[in-house]
Image 1 (cartoon, rainbow, N blue to C red):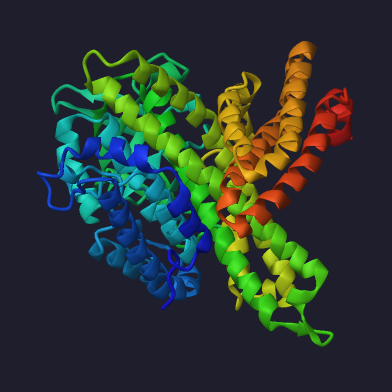
Image 2: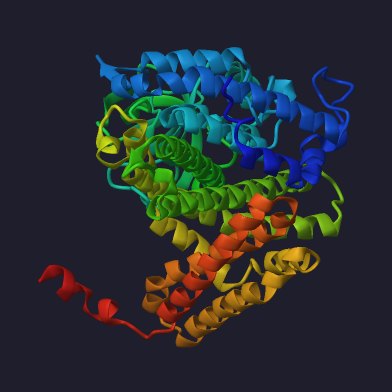
Length: 572
């Protein structure tokens, strides 16, 4: 019986060797609930066994019941009729299965009937759901809405809505984008005004490109402070969809057809303020979007894994010139590169998830505790900085390689892969959105470059280098340190040049250098546990060295021909 969890040797490897002990203790508050809830673990081992059992169940559902219907779900898609949105039949069936399996409250506390699992375990779940059917993840993965309510809303809102999320009674949406405010969320104009008579807020305006905009409960960014024009005038609200919210249309998209992307009109819609006024974009939406970005990295991973599996299966079966194409160097080279990229994306995404878990729980301790130890505050500060740079790096890397892997998967299939009868065609279409929504790749560079320039990752590099130095992989340390030196030299060059446009132009080179270095170090520190991982790590290191030299030469080239002449090059 197929199982996307048990059958994935890399996920099994990481579940065995990732350091989840600290995360587990933090999430379980040192197992304080063991005498309150029957399903609460008493120690780390029990918690990990719970993770294993739930992921096993989800892996089977994804492989045996959701994936076989994915093509039909894509063909039917979400539909819009008379102002209402209807999920594809297969999507409705999948949501029912996930609800019956009690998998809709992954990270929510037990008191709201959630599983109280770490973000890291939820990341694995998102990957598997995405491997089964990418569009479904855009409904399943919006559990981040509930997590944000849990993090920032008052107890009344949490008690009212979180049990409904856990039970699968409601779905969520993140309502940010407007026709005139795409990635620039400071330009949001949807108006929020307080209705004294009804003792509630009212929302008026339009939103566009809203994933799962037909959701029952949503978080919305709106302008609460009249006369303001920037992010300081924005607040976050929760609304429960009623007749005042008009779904004007859904988009006709290239991929993820089962995920409805809606245009919404708000007509005096009643809403509740979440947290404090003026903090909507500055704090709450940034937290929400960082969670969503990590989720999209996992979605991209799932799509890439699905495409790789299809390509490998085809290469094993297809014969040309009296031999299997798997045994032809151009083909096995593609497959080896695909496999390496997927495992690289998985290690940075999962390790980032661990850091996010630690950050979130330390933040909770600081917010709710008295006389919190200075060391805890310092650790929380460090984890916040790391999460801020690694989250966009994960999203950038995983989504870019998903597009590359799905491209290669079609190439391996040849002409047949271009046909709708083959799943790789769907995976290719689904992957394309991942490096666009929740912030394009270019915006991930903007989000990460500050941390790269200030060398926030140097403490992580030093920690990982120390681990490698104490292992058989020490033989690769000089090469790794040389890549690190080139990164630091490139940073120094940009600081000395002190040219804003030049730095912006070459920022992606710098971010990719830092990302490659982090991934290589992670792969090498895992290499001693597996011959396979050693091969993957060595392959990725060799590629990193070549890319490092290229990126360094680009950054230090003083080549400004495009910067100085882009209008002539583009417009003439």
